[in-house]
Length: 166
Image (cartoon, rainbow, N blue to C red; front, side):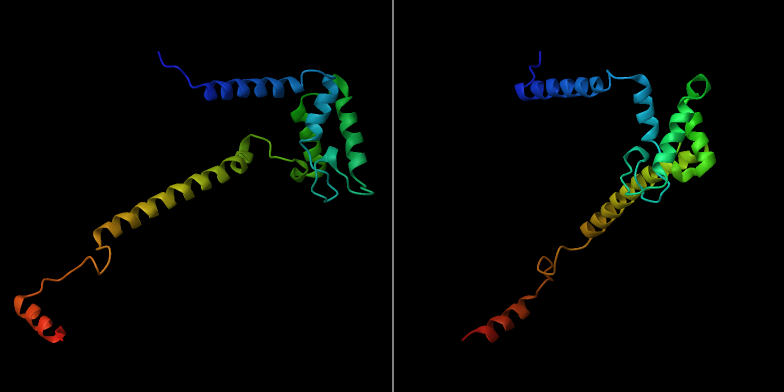
């Protein structure tokens, strides 16, 4: 039976403890305030500050307080405002897709999620192929001119000795 090193066991224990701590952080609290925070953090303030709606600290922002009020109204609507996606879609219909902090997963918006990953993987594979190609091409050539010594005849050696003697 394999015995795990102590430092790996401690690392695994620390990982489990951190995972439990992070998951328990959101365990308490009011469900509606958690939902309000989750939806509010999925939107960007439209005042062109580029900040998340609930964290907009733009001095004298004309839009954030109005948008937060609209979010509260949407959540207080009939049936609790419906699903989160319905509320986000209401904001998209009113302000445009730029109100979303991240594109909604589905339909054509999937492209916004997969294209960066696809380009990264393609660039990595292309670089690996190029480096491998260069390494194969380099191995076919002599390493340097010092490694390449053409054959020298005996008469040439004798002439070199005569010319280099004192």
